Length: 257
Ligand SMILES: Nc1ncnc2c1ncn2[C@@H]1O[C@H](COP(=O)(O)OP(=O)(O)OP(=O)(O)O)[C@@H](O)[C@H]1O
Image 1 (cartoon, rainbow, N blue to C red):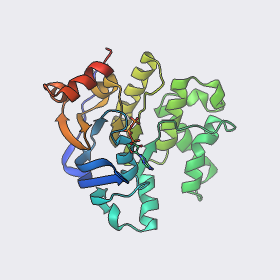
Image 2 (cartoon, rainbow, N blue to C red):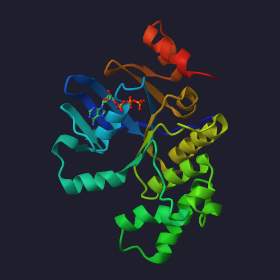
Image 3 (cartoon, rainbow, N blue to C red):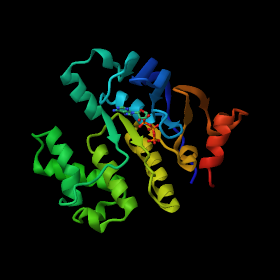
């Protein structure tokens, strides 16, 4: 399916990273990362295993701190942020984890209302129900509301996991390997959902993936992490139109379409 037209504001960087470095002892993972994510954009981050993609999004969501460099998220400088601001930011920045497990003993409804009630304890029962039903409808799974996670397919569980993040109406979505472990048809389904989320919620997203079909289908722009920096960026075609052996090897290994 063709990607719907994105409405990107290139004058508004919701994430702005300059000169970011992060090491773990002598493992120099990020070696001077510069990156902007623009309002309304789907940005795909590619890179081999262990290149620091997850470290990058953990820094963006305040789970890890940078060694040096500046990281601004929605105008807040993460090097100078207090705990209240960080809590607020974690609502505005939705993180869809690689293995974001649902609570097995809760129904779909309970799974989704859990973060909502924790974040907004004063919401009425009627308002909670309305918001849970709305987000389930947006991910196409309203009919599963009373089911248990064990009764759902892998793709449906992934959708519910994304709905649980979306229910807080984040401004930014971070997807860590959204299609990992899913069969090719279900992957296409999740790619479509990522594009629908961009349209319906007007989110700006970072999508970390090895799945080049996912990158091609969802990304307005692709960046590739090579040796701790973003050395290549552009459209899918622009990123891979190179004689750089590292990039060619990544393509040959990962693209099966
Ligand atoms: N908390 C930590 N303590 C020490 N080293 C870490 C920590 N987190 C990540 N690393 C190291 O940082 C490097 C980058 O890890 P990261 O998880 O970001 O890779 P990745 O690009 O997301 O890989 P994958 O595609 O396999 O998920 C790895 O060498 C990893 O061992």
